[in-house]
Image (cartoon, rainbow, N blue to C red; front, side, top):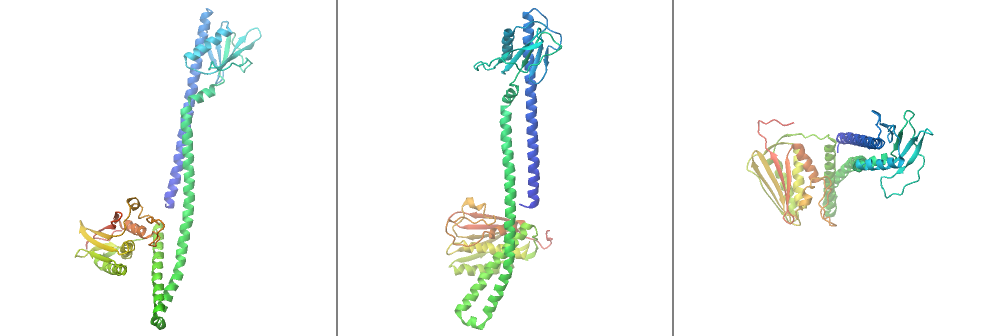
Length: 431
């Protein structure tokens, strides 16, 4: 993941988290306000109903205004302008609250004119099965401007509103857990990114460091090969040739790692020029045939009898073809049978490289072009490699905007298909 893309992910993820948390906070606050307003309205309706019934029983009339006054969020004073019976008040309160489906505890007090104080009436539970507590003086202050009135307090108002918001609270908890998981995942991604960068820089530095000893080995192998005494000794000559072959193998892997590092850093540039595949491919096929015959195999090719002009980077096109042929030789079984077939259709060259190896299961084919990926073979590692060849091929094809795909079935070999656009003499080199 590039630094710019990672920065975008972090910024957009943070904005998304802040937006979601903000919306959820607004939703919870709005729901709380709605439930609080509903509670106040129901409580006032219930108290008004009680005052109306008390006035009717006393053949009195209610005040024209300010019958129910809300002194705080859970404390109300009701002006009746008539005498109040405590037992009757408690009964009517319970009836009105049940009628409005307001199942909440309450405590009440009645103003005593003789003492100018609130006479505490009692604490009533919404649940009748709960044992009532002894009446103790609650915080129900009087009103200096009224004469006949009672006060009602709802101690469990907050718990009642939270109970009404159970679904909202549950969804909020789920959202917070999701946000926490997302934030944790983001931290893990950043940590893994940092570790991957350190690993990549280490590999790149080590790969660059290999260039100097490899150059020394190449020079030493060339000197040994030209020495007359080594040439006369079959054993020493074989060792010198083996050193040169292993140098070529290791140098090829180092160059491949450096090229892939260049691609991933964005420093990679395709140097396209007009080339003819009919001139580029035969030397590669001859080399692959020699390696195939060393393993008692056979390689055949069939190409159109016409020029095959392409606009491509000659070096990277050569590396692509070499990698495809090399994979066919290595994974083609003990006696590989390799076929290279090309055909022209709709101004495109369709090139197929096939082998008769063990094939690749379908679940592994999608990951075949991933970096460092190798098809699992258990504890058997007959073919050595780093899983960079087809990754490099895929990156070069993508840079050229070529199509590449794999076709394989277990036990029936593997075919890699390339689709390359042919160029015309009047065509300009694309940028």
